[in-house]
Amino acid sequence: MKNLRMKAARAGMDMSQEDLAKACNVSRQTISAIEKGDYNPTINLCIAICKALGKTLDELFWE
Image (cartoon, rainbow, N blue to C red; front, top):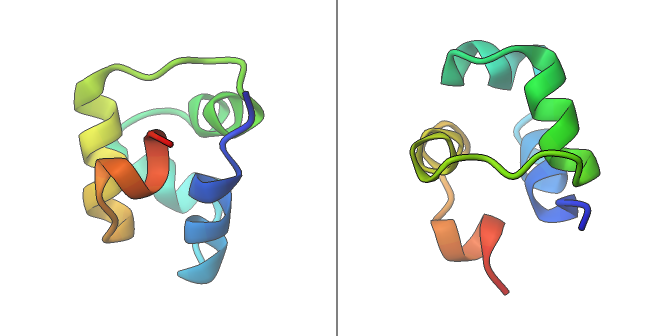
């Protein structure tokens, strides 16, 4: 399932995929794959993404 909430939060902060990837110490391709729903991130990566975007796990990853 695509993660449009993560993509919207990233865009709302005017961050590129590359910017978010650097903040989370992963590749841009990893961020792209998460947004497209091709990759299920670890809980540690989910937490890093949430911290970088100023969101909670519920806001970005759970319905």
